[in-house]
Length: 168
Image (cartoon, rainbow, N blue to C red):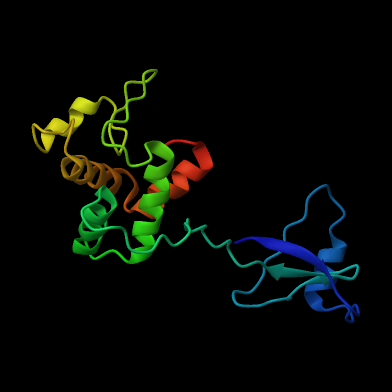
């Protein structure tokens, strides 16, 4: 449980808990706070307040709209929808793969060997989906969505990792 000392507007009259807390003069002090209480203990004009846990950051990306029919993005949009994911997951996928390959099926990172739309490393991993992995955007997208699902859960999970680390 996270606690914070917060100044009170008007210090209350000493309570039993405050008197007990004031009696401690050692290097450390411990205070028990009743569950669900906001300011059970006060001392020297401060109250002990339970802090709400931080909310996890949810990655989001700008909305991209509907891609042109027949494009790699259109193929990906259909696959995202087939998985039951909302369009916000497609937005994250577009942002992620824009950063990685600009959706170029032939994108080849000469320094790392990563290849294709999802930048598989090595590219030949995508042969687990089909032999046409080097030229077929659908094969690359199938493999890429499988990788994202297994490692990050969703495209927004992968996008969030990419935003914080620079890679996914």
